[in-house]
Amino acid sequence: MALAEVGAGAGRLARWAGAGRLARWAGAGRLARWVGAGRLARWADAWRRWRDARIADPDFQAWAARSPLTRPVVRRQSAALYDLVAGFVYSQVL
Image (cartoon, rainbow, N blue to C red; front, side, top):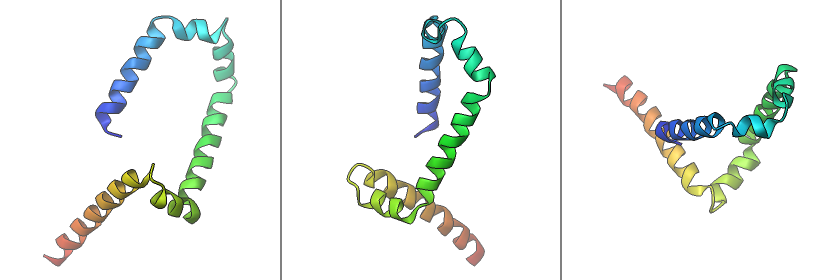
């Protein structure tokens, strides 16, 4: 995902929240209590641990390389990583 896409998404979220929708969705302080209790941070940490474990799993990596939905992303990222490493190698050779 490009940095510009992330910025655009953040702007949409800010407009959505700024319109008071987030407050109406959250109810009377329910979101504030949930965030204040640290539940959001614990949930986010658990999500990141689960995601990182899946990404590090060789079976998942093989599936992602074979899947028609993820194949273009995997190939693009692997080509970018190869180019980065090749650049370091070329700089050491010169």
